[in-house]
Image 1: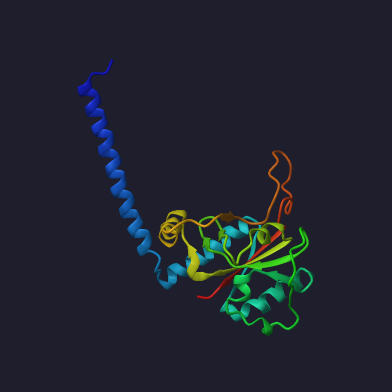
Image 2: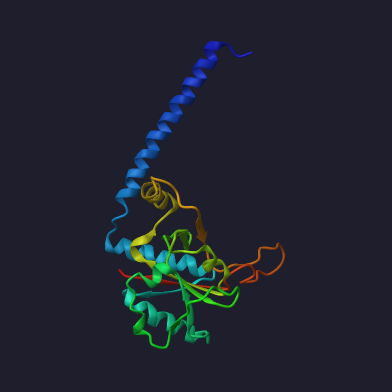
Amino acid sequence: MMNKTARDEIMALVRSGTAAQVVDSGAEMVSFDADEKLREDDRKTLIADFRRYAAQEAATSERVAGANDVPQAITRYLRQLELPLQVLAAGEIISGGVDWGLADELEILNRPIRPDGDTVVTGCYAGLAEAGAIVTVSSAHFANELQFLAATHIVVVPVERIFADYEGLWSVVSREFAAGMPRSMNWIVGPSRTADLGVPSKLGAHGPARVHLLVVGG
């Protein structure tokens, strides 16, 4: 049996190690916060990584200069795929300062989503460069079913909301939601697909068959 002295010594080492980890984590958090303001070269690399990793997960992307380029980019994308020039848009997108009149042929539908057939346009809370992922959070202006029931999901991603890694993103999440987390937070990497072993993956099996990212700004 371990005597009390030996046990105390071991517990002291454990506590010392844990304390050191807490200090180290705090230091990392500061560095991630400081890294949010990136130099222009770093920002370009971050955006390139985000788009590259997204492409590896079967998502497509386009970079546009500003919010008012979004309607024309959507029209262009739908035409390329020979899809109807009709979209459902999340409330935050409709009220987000985009001049939808710049694309006269694009129709914004005002009805509930029909599973597996509609094109949906949403924003996102953040983009994650190291995974090519987008992060969405539920709100009064963002219904979760839009992103999961659509056949085609078009996501507007502001460049200033693209983060290099999970740690940097979580440091911002913990600060921005200090008063309480949203009801749901979803991490989306490319289109929906099957994951059966030994069988080729099928896109669109349980949700959108296409995910298209419009990287806006910068």
